[in-house]
Length: 260
Image 1 (cartoon, rainbow, N blue to C red):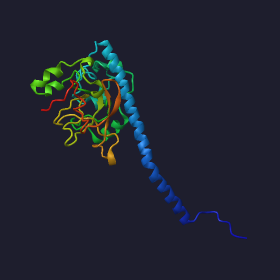
Image 2 (image 1 turned 45 degrees about the vertical axis):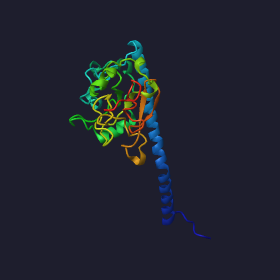
Image 3 (image 1 turned 90 degrees about the vertical axis):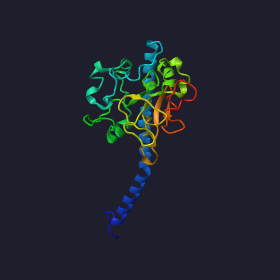
Image 4 (image 1 turned 180 degrees about the horizontal axis):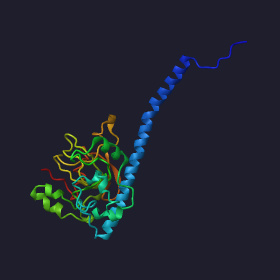
């Protein structure tokens, strides 16, 4: 009678381990893509909720846009309040801007992907004394009732400075309302990282731009895309790079955006 074998040999164990390693190598990229797709879906859903809030604000205010510098924080966001947990508006409602009454109580202010990359990359325009604990990750187009006109040469200012109503936007399906923004600058693409919740882009690419951390090719978070809500209320992916760059999709006055 042959001897009964109760254990695997070393070679058999090594083969099993090798098979498991190969399967993991095949499955992990797919799982990562699924996880990121779920995060992106959440981010798009957040922006749709912002669209509903903006719609209600407009209906209550004669079709005006909120002012882009005070839509979230009453005193503006230039102190990097977006990542300051002590300035969270649920705990500090007295700091809230004009759109907050339509957004309070909603857990839609932070894209999960941005929460990860902002903590890793930090805030390039902040003094470093406040921990980067993202609270709010969406920025409003500063060409919609905002301060963008002040950055333009005099011949172009009046048209933008008077643009306060939805009905004045010439191409609402091609003008973004809210979008994601990086917390760091990108050489050749933007000279500024997020320091507030006001996105002002210029044709020389020295200021703000759309985020680049979704779907980054080869893992390069400076080369990906962002999600954006448009004035007509649809949400889509946008690129900070030409031809559909941030400045082009910011310009609400119709015609070819001016260069300076």
